[in-house]
Image (cartoon, rainbow, N blue to C red; front, side, top):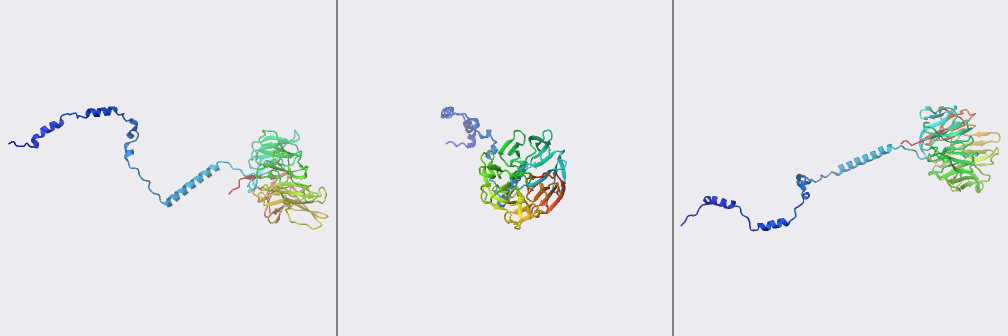
Length: 446
């Protein structure tokens, strides 16, 4: 009987058997299958594009933000956005609307030497912006960016129409006007200078790039419609678009107030001597309300008679709703005359001049301001027997600007009066008594 051999004694034989190279029976089948299989392209291996750590790391979950902190963060972002908008907006120059209330800029006027002077009402300071003689009727454009004025052309016995920067710099002649003209101002878009002469309303291109355009023919210019008094853009162009012209003229519907679309041919009568409920009507000083819905004007009776009646009226643009502005009544033996009408920039008040004709004398009254809602009247403190070279409202509607005419105690003085109290402020400026002053419109300050 043989004895069993231990594992230890057989270990060399076992290891030799394991290490001997052998080929399995199915090896040829594996090689055939591999040969028939297409190799995987290299771009499909993620580790060739991204580090393996980026793929193997666990995606972190965003931590939750408390609601209170989220609200604070949203408010901060909103404040930042608003600040960016405000900063961006401040980089663009702002201009006032062509109608209605605006901020008060400088006042320009021609002094007694014929130079054009700019003054600051706040501190009373002045400076000459157009030196020399022969300058007249300076008027700012509605946007406050330009200054138009007249320059005496002695060689041609005419006026040159000049446009400059608001400080008088870079002047350029854009046309000429005869010496007998009426209204002198601007179109609402500040693109053209407007003048009434020879029965025509002319518009001059601000840059002088084109010949004057005739906006209307057959306009009465010598009846006070477009004189130097309170001459501003609302005398003529209808707010808020400025797409209609207001004028006095004679047509088939009678002599009276007409409105005409800019560029149009057929004027529309508002009120004439044929349609007025008051017989013998004669019209002057028409002016649009700042919102374009109404027209203020002076309706006179017995024109060219020493004792004539003239009162200020308001009418709707379509010719309805005729209403007298003032409830003031004189004694039965007196006759009241009112004229030179001007709306306040906000349209709540109307200002005009008034005279009371007694049997043997004339009582000259100051400029009167009437509140249209209450009919309350306020007289300005300054009384000028010989009238004014011009007067008008300040852009913000708080003041009345006046330049008294010749033979007045304050002839040529540039006066500012409080439109609410009538109180007069003496600034110490002296202008040409034959013409008014112009107050620059700016963007109101908050």
